[in-house]
Length: 373
Ligand code: PLP
Figure 1 (cartoon, protein in one colour):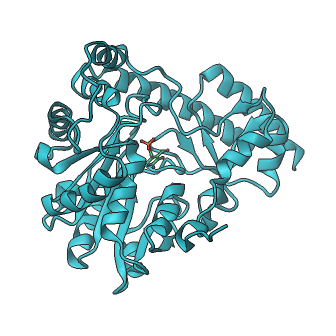
Figure 2 (cartoon, protein in one colour; figure 1 turned 60 degrees about the vertical axis):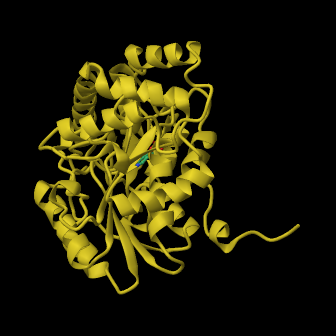
C-alpha cells in the first residue's frame, strides 16, 4: 500500500466518538454538540418546495444562490451591524467547511495557527490538514481567551488565530472589548483573525459582537452556520465572509473540493435566515433554563464551574476518575482533554437535552461525585 500524507497522519479521529461508543445504548447522552429541537417548519417546507419544483436538480453558483447570500447579508446587517456584500459570501457545507477553506486559503506549510485550548477539535485538525502548526493558547480563569495571550503567541510565522465566542467546549463569551482587541491584533500584526460565530444566538448574558465590526484592515473573516442557530446540523449549511480578495482565494478551494453547498439545504437556510426568528429565541430561553438547572446541580455537588454565558455547554472542574465514574453510571460526558491539553481536569457537559433528562443526569453525576469522595 502506498503511504499516507504526513498532514493526514498528524490527525486522529476525534476522541468524542469513542466516548459515545463506550457508553451503553440506554445511556443519557450529554456529549452531543447539537440542539435537541426540530428544524423550524418554514425551513423544512422551503426545501420540500424547492425539491418538488425541480429547483435543486442542478449545481447552484459556486458561492451559493444569490437569494441565499442576500439573506445572509441581511442577517449580518440585522444581527451584527455589518455591511456585507452578497458577492463576498460563500455558502459552505456547514461551518466545518468554512473553517477548512479559511485555513487552506491562508496557511502555508509550517505556518502557525493560534487557537483556544481547550477549544473546538477542528481547529487543531484543520490546521494540520492545511500543513500548518497548531499553537494552542491557555485560557483565563473564566475560560475566555485573553487577547494578550494571542498577542504573546504571535511570531513571524503566524498566519492566523481563531476566536470562538460563544465557545465550544467552554460556553465562554468574549467581551466586546476583547473582540475589539482581536481586530486590532489582526491589523497590527497583519495576521488573519478567523471568527467562528456558530453559537452567536446562544448568548445568555451580555451580547455577541463580531470582531468584524471593529475591522479596518480586512484581516477578519467570519465563519457561521445555520447548524446551531436553527437546529440544522444535519442540513450542512454554513458560510464564510470576508474581504473580497480573501473570499476569492477561499472560493478556489471550495470550487474544486465542493463545487457548491447542497442545493436543498441552501433553500432551507434562506428560509430559516429570512423567515420568523421565534425559534432562535425559544431555544435560547430553553438553554438558559437548563444551564441554570445544571449550575445549581454542580454547586450542590461541590464542583466548581465557570458560569457559561453562551452556547449549550458547561465545563466544570472535576476530580480524577470522575468522567469514567459518570460514564460507567450511564451518563455520557466528554473528558476535557479531548479539546486540548489544558482541558485536563475538566469535563464538557452538553445541556442540549430536555430538563427531565437533565435532572436525571444531574442525580447520577451527584452519585458519581459522592462515590469519589
Ligand atoms: N465551530 C464550532 C465551535 C462548533 O462547535 C462546530 C460544531 O460543533 C462547528 C464550528 C461546525 O459546525 P457545522 O455543524 O456547521 O459544521
